[in-house]
Image 1 (cartoon, rainbow over the protein chains, first blue to last red):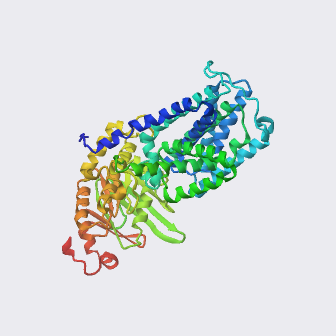
Image 2: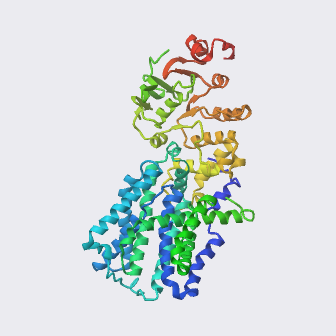
Image 3: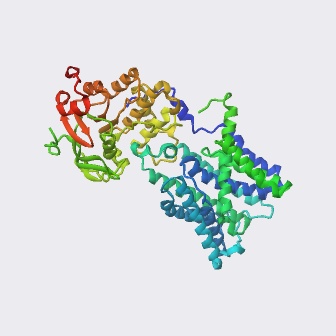
Length: 328
Length: 262
């Protein structure tokens, strides 16, 4: 094969380069550590939710799998980390690894139920799997604490060095580092040939087998991987709050997550992160002003986004910036 | 003509034995014995509803047959998944709207080439770092006159360019047998010539089975023609023989079709 070094190829070659805006974006959470030292608990929760949202974006934004039950894997990870710590395996990183692996296994097994049929089938199947896990955790109170939650989760210091402190410094540094590491991996993945094939599946799954693509196997793989991400997020929540409540498996968390990804913009990773920041900041401030009215504004924003900015805040930003910068 | 002799010649690369497909009582294809020779330029003609596209769907694995079998180079592929047939060199195009609207032309082609090169599971290095895939995609761009629209989104392409991309995607899979489902349907004449020029440039190692309604194109392109009507094969032979065949003239070409066109 000859190699006509066409200039057109440059766009694809540079697609995976880190841009300046990305570097600045990732300096923000570092700045936040110094700017809001009294809000580190909230910031940790944001980092954890962002990781969870990233996980949903991998399947929804890239592979086109819509899920209302992504909380299932978050909950599996949360309980796995909590139970491990309660049984003497209190090393945080070990907990993360086991929680992620376990969630991946549950994701792999449930993928065969979930990846059938169209969007509605998937919506209902994912919801159903999450409901079953919720009720199982509720009924197995002897192990999970049931509605009282799993208490007495005590973690060892991170890497044997950093104890989890009351101010949440270790928790924030830990959550942020894990978020960044997994974001970096996801970013590599979405720019790889595997990631390209996922985007192809989302756009036209019927066409993909005719290109030689084993569509189902690809979807199973990304679904399992996203489950692992969600499991790690759940484990982080358990380890940094030292408690597991039954609501880690509850429906509102799934719905909220879907909302975050749609608000931020699905299918570009940063949408999940920005959606999380905006959603949780708004929640924090608006609920502080008037707790009863928060869901009203939430609903209004959701309707506006779906009607007028289907590609979310990221899409809005891109369209604003479009005349100035080159569009892909 | 008929089906006698098929399955016995060494050079038959794709063949069907008694292939049939019924949709809720409607017989779309029945008891079909068809053979495509190695390197053939084989056209499939017949009136609308004759079962031509259904046949392509059965051959490519897009649909499962109700009865009969499909063989590729002697291997029974009747129950083989679509993507595995593609890996074995049996590749199809689609008639309408089966592209990737939000991908650029280059992205679409790189996707297709990456899959053929077996890179589809690679998730570490960026697409742009796989030089072999990019080089091959670039070669396809040049070959099908798509280089000037390489970075344009598929949804913004002219219809003719979309049809060229459809063929480029199939070629990216390096077919041994290429099934073309009305590649030029709806394309203005000027552009359809470009399209057929690209098809004509295919190496003779590729067998082509073509559905086409434009009889001028068929008779210029094909060295063998099969005629379907009502889901059954009613005639098969050289273009000259088909043009003279009274049954074909009756059901499809019409009594006035001038044999001098051949």
